[in-house]
Length: 581
Image (cartoon, rainbow, N blue to C red):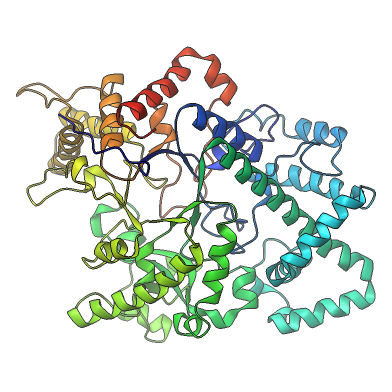
């Protein structure tokens, strides 16, 4: 029998839902702050205490939430473009935008270029009319600019230069007259002398857009507080090479080493990943330089984040201890595919991918990496000022990491089918440490229902066409099904009988087991709640369907459909039974 832990106000249930995946009547082809407001109300109604989001910082051209062009600026693509939400916007402009997006609005995937263009047009309309609006609004905007000047001035200058030189170009492709931040400031000063109104107008526009973003998100935080729901943010381990942070503070970064993850051999289908690993292209931090001012860059980043989020996830926490580094940018990956180490070194001046600052190969190195992580993470905890911190500690985790996170009061992940003992049996949920974050999946994985069905598919293909390779895969599939079954107390099939199809009964057992665990946080992917097989991201790939998935329904449609409404009602009942309400 699944045993329940003692009642605790700290135990909470959550749903992971990307903002871009939400729908509402009147949106413009992507989720927005009003769509998320509907989900906050739904969460409060169903005793869900946390809504976990992906990063909301402004994306780069590849449209990944983990490729922000600023550590602070918010992405205007999530703005709710309604007259009541954006001062200066007109109903006529909104109608024209909706007409231009007619084929996009009901699509199952986000069309980023079309949506960005439509929202950009609406924001330009609002900005053109802003000076005619009330004095109170203009004073509010001016106060925002003054309060946020320490980052906003650099950001608006960077966005102006992006627009001026072409959005598709990275800053290292700009003219030599703008290649450094000091030269760029001189360049813009010269442009001001030629046309003050134009330059000031464009700088003002980008500041205006950020004012709207913070205005809507802070209002959403207030609404969530009133409904007793916490918004959970996400802090990527790095920022894009093409970011205003790197451009204006290059002293904080290594511009010739880029973070990633080590190779994982034949377990990966991507040949570059097999040979070299994942190259994320994020410049490494110069931790030694950051330490000189008490990690001020990080402290400011976290302080701003916690204005909106009461809980946040630190992406790739292992990178605070040591990170796998590449001496080339991802654009060059194909040059190195299939090369030997000697051949690769001949193209890089002798440098090869390695651990930075050191591998975890000896006790002395492990101790040094732990000490580095301790120094950096204590600065994060200090800046969080009581906000709850979750560490994404997945992958190959050195043995010193989880005890250290527990010492700092940072919750680590627990994924039941990965958390097994030496005999291959899952750790019971009742044995999960209190300060942990239990979930079956993340945005980088299939939801548990798709995992179950995927395993059945592997077994079925082997039965139809058995060979050595599928036999190896079947063993992994059957092991995963057995571990999930043991964890959720799903009866194992009798000898000679196959594994059962994924059903409502299996779903309820899996959900109940997770919610009944001792972990302080138990979070489901929204796709797991509604038995949807779609995946948010396929690591190591770009474009395609990544970061584009949209739910098929609005909250109103969910409430009006008895089957969909029942999913929420069953979840609420399980939350009550497992005493997470």
